[in-house]
Amino acid sequence: MRASVGDRLLVHGRIVGQHDRTAEIIEVLGADGTPPYRVRFEDGHETLMSPGPDTVVRHFTADAQE
Image (cartoon, rainbow, N blue to C red; front, side, top):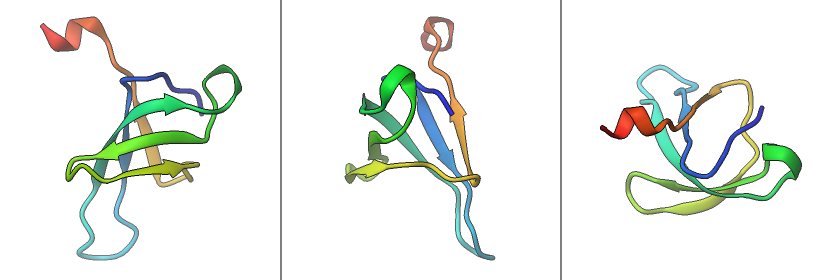
């Protein structure tokens, strides 16, 4: 997994009834875009993450902001 600051992580719910969560990557701590990442969730909570197989990277593009 490789990501950059500004990318988003989509974390799929692991159990029935658990919703997907989205977090923005605010710092990349691994070499060449690899985990761990410092992320901020929608509710403002920040944490370090080493995403597992239930996580997808949504890459930031300048076109998406227009």
